[in-house]
Length: 212
Image (cartoon, rainbow, N blue to C red):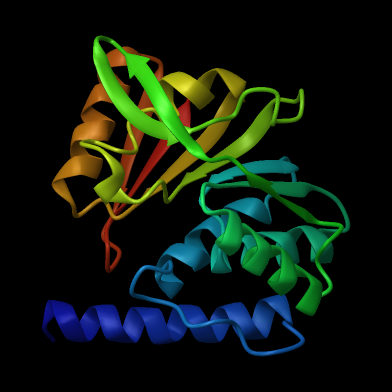
């Protein structure tokens, strides 16, 4: 069986398991394309379901926000916070949370992109000034900002957010098949010797890092 066929079967199985185990009241929005793939959604859902995971922070909102919030709802505790740079899309994400009766389990934070200078390079990244709750997060999902906004667009998540994570927190980076995301992970590992990397052979690739 070829790699493409394996990916198709894995994603069908992942989507089926999400529907069966998470008991959604309606069909999910389309996956794939710019949206997360089912195999990535299944991976982060399994992590969110862990007993010691209560608060997850996302870079970019969308179908992953619905999935993670549904996990918290079924557990009866926890919350998801999602950074979204596009105000219009942030409103769409909030409306989707209402449709799934998940407003109490996730918060979409409108955070326009702003210039951030890190180690002598300027990036376009989320303006998080006074926007995040004063808590330590158990997990971080990095699926934004869009790769096109600046070179190595997702690297700033490390210096900007890793300090807000608990020891033992897991970081999930989508689209790890792309050069920019691979470069971001290289830089994160260079900057944070206490982080361990695991690679998942998902359709779009995934890097899972653990803050030790």
